Length: 433
Picture (tube, rainbow, N blue to C red):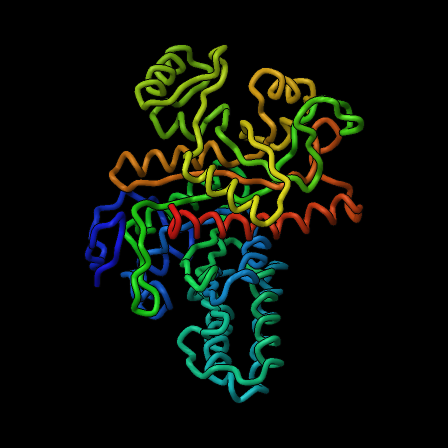
């Protein structure tokens, strides 16, 4: 199999490149690889269990489910662990699986799927490990008979969402195809959960199990020369005026706007500890960190108070172009990645991040993600990173819009458009970059 890449023909064979170490199995990606289940899963089975080179990482399972509505075809992978005992979640899972089996059994077209869920229900009752649940929109996993009745398909979609909404202790993953101008882009949407520590586990598994040399869909190769990973999330917009009223500083940031990060600053505990620097209280450790950070090719803010890590220029440009095409209101500036949501309680210091470093947003993941991209690139797997985030609140004024308010509605609508811009950007990197 060959494809054009940079004007040269390259052969796309089975993937053999050595991958860095992954500790444990925390996502359906790792479980599918280790168990051999990837051989039965669309997309993975043509690529030796490897994920596509284009990743969108999100913090919340709801955003994974929102994303699949923008895809032509998708596979949802859900890892549900064994839930032993009569806890509230265990009881709910049993009841939901039983309800799913009952409802699906009424439709002859879904008999195989009913059998699969019945098996999972039986395992769950015995306290045994449930297989990763694999639900496939339009494809129905290994159940090849298409749904001719749209009502049946809609019912299945509802059931899938119910099961995934109440599953506990797992990471949701979607594999799918984004189509634009008649060209298909395979991509992964990965729930990392909130914060750099969770992301350090889950996004690392996703990145290490992605291939950067191209991808096969339906027997046809799609070119790639790097893994492109974009954080698509929400943020607090940093303003200087009180409560977002009468902003005089430029740019004026409103709820529902998008911010594309040129770089992120952070306390960086995940990066420090990955580099073997354990304690921020130990002066020798911090001197060691400063030396290692510079040696790795990174920098600090001019005052030396914050380590800085930059987004990839190609991804910044692709996000800017895609956002413009879709008519999004976008700001460009630095981002601050925090370890705790409650750091925002000190609004004066948050405002200083904008005054001193032109940080326009605060969120909890990008700095760590950019460092993971660097670590994998250092291991010989080229990774480009970026961040686009929807402003859901302003600081000062409140990290989140008031529930039920028009501002919250605007932020929610804007998030879906942001997800589409992210997919379009990845498409541009593949076919225009």
